[in-house]
Amino acid sequence: MNILMVGDIVGSPGRKMFARVVGQMRQRGAVDVVVANAENTAGGRGASRVNIEELLDAGADVLTMGDHTWDQKDIIPFFEHEKRIIRPANFAPGCPGRGIVSVDTPKGRVSVMNLVGRVFMPPADCPFRTADTLLSKEPNLGKVILVDLHAEATSEKIAMGRYLDGRVSAVVGTHTHVQTSDETILPKKTAYLTDLGMTGSKDSVLGRDLASVLSKFVTGMPSKFEIAEDGVALEGAMIDVDETTGRARKIVRLRELMDHVK
Image (cartoon, rainbow, N blue to C red; front, top):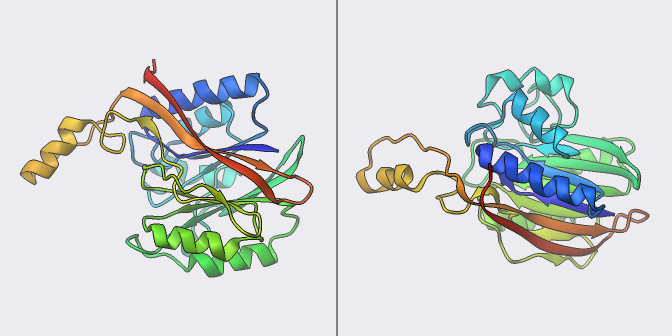
């Protein structure tokens, strides 16, 4: 089973790049499952219902979120309607939506778990204990289980990879928008990457226009961060998983570049 996991999609350029690359990969049969982080799709903060429908139509099987989950209010009731978008499972009890979902594909069932870190992040329940609870109590997860840990600290992500090694097929990080180069298959056959990176403008500061961000840093004055549009890339990882055992066989970083996406 060939699985594409895509880093934080930022704004309209990121959405368009995602649609183009995933469409091409689907057309040539290069990918069986697509999971993407969508928490920056609405102008860099959160995701709207329209954004989510656009990405699902473009080929995403599951969309994950993060600390900006509730920034766009129109998405809140959508979590009860559309099961293919999930939010961190370790948000406070009573939040709308779910933190894990299972989807059936031609090559078997795939379950995706979304967690948020606690180091340098807003308050949340323990992601490690939450993962334990979901893995022990959720029925019929299937052999292939993917985890998106949306977190700031590399140490927390590495620790989660080691903690879940052998119990899930892959643990990948999102949130920092900077792709790391530590992709590996852990000793018990779980694929791991500290951060998938970003799908958006690389000629930017984390997907935002250079001038507006530099103004904030240099002057200290408030500045609206516009979405940058040039040098657009899709970043993520391709993961090869044995669908009969759930064990990962290979993980390869992916970066597809384009000068401008219209």
